Length: 114
Length: 114
Image (cartoon, rainbow over all chains, first blue to last red; front, top):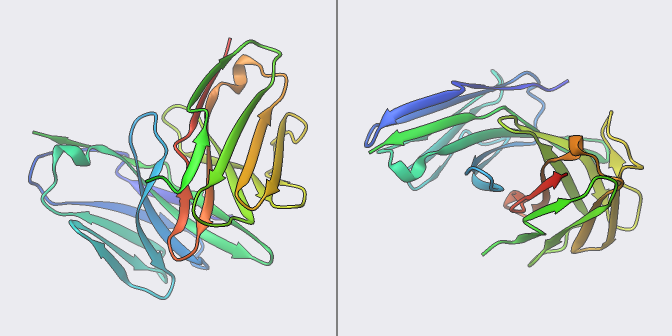
């Protein structure tokens, strides 16, 4: 059974700092990995999608890496801003036979202090 | 704008009544949609996979008679919480796989049963 773990559970940093969020998964047979952000009481916003054959993806100040063989991904946020404060969720997509599912970690709650 | 639209965003109902939540894909067709439930400070848990034109696939422990799923068209899936009880109060989120973009989520529905 796939398990996704995110460390740390919470992180508080001053504005402008660079930071890294970690995600690990137990079964490397994934289709892809996605990073999401969730604001309180809201749905999920997709940040980055990394296919299993890729090593990293970048979007603006965000960079996500994937090491499938070791079951790890990181989300790097450069020059953090108060608006980055949210919960960040890592999820792996599994496809087996005719079914698929997205397995989530519990998230990292990020607070960026002005 | 949102590519997966979910309504209502919040609903309060009396115990014993039923509530219907709609999930629509706005600019793409989704033969499969997914329904999740999220308790406070917890991650998303997959409840069921909704398949257009066929029966939904429920995760272990999810009561199919309580959480009725209908996927009548390629752009609409509905989740009906039947005979709701206070313990059904939660945040329900739907998603669909958007080609080349991965999983895309609705904005969620906050259900409160009183």
